[in-house]
Length: 86
Image (cartoon, rainbow, N blue to C red; front, side, top):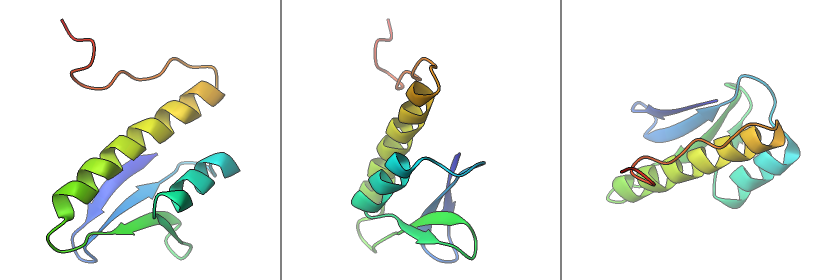
């Protein structure tokens, strides 16, 4: 999966390499992401003046979703930057 910014449409996007489980898509819906079927991408608009907060929240959500997917596949989670560093 990839997290990216679309400057043209002032939004963030998450694109999966394969269809994610229903648990993941429900988490996306619950946190304000919308499915854009034409492009097969989950989209979250960037509100003017709140871009930094939306991007920071999206990055946290992206890491959490990635770790949920890793856990479902029996893989170790990816550590967050700065956490547990010596």
